[in-house]
Image 1 (cartoon, rainbow, N blue to C red):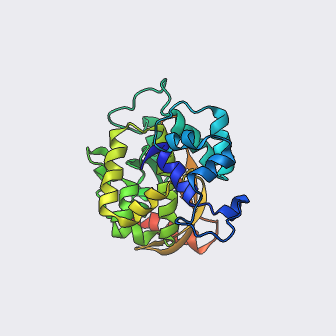
Image 2 (image 1 turned 90 degrees about the vertical axis):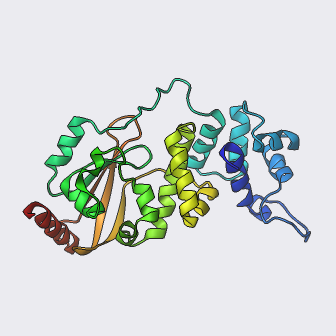
Image 3 (image 1 turned 30 degrees about the vertical axis):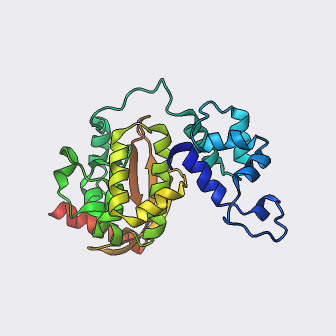
Length: 279
């Protein structure tokens, strides 16, 4: 089940009655999570109305009802925003997505000027739109450098699940996959009708059981700065700070990776830069 109904169902299934102050008096339950009638009671709506919400038959739920459901489900701020986005659907005033995404020329020049910092630009669903030479060598040196200019750009989310190099690069790969799918889930509320998203999700659900499991969980999260550990095939282990910049309002991301000055990771990154620009 997708959309609003799937999200409500997944969050309801993840809450135990005792977590919200409900007493079961030893009764045997067929499901571990909250029943529909229990959630309806906590949110102050009728059971029949809540069932229609889960079935996608009540598209005009009020802000008050959605807020009550968010409180009853103990949603985080991001999950609450996601709930409202799913209930409202894509904003009608949003411009149509361009057929082919592209990084602005000024952004590409900025990347080229960053010779000591790996940097890449990602499209709204993870396509590599641009990278500098060090960013390419760091994240995807086994992929042709000119692939970002072609019709079939490499996709970071797809590579994270299906590419052995990318899997080995991220030391904490399970955590990284959870974060990536949660961010994709958040984007899905803003781009629900985008065929590119449907193609990416469908492909990964078929080819990766882990992606399918994470997608079904309906967790949502933002893409934010983080400190990550990497195991690079050329220069070995590095601890790098990932910064996330947003060049415009199109959901493109500019990612940069830096190391603490004077650290072994900084030395490894400098060694990689020397190898890239000496070649």
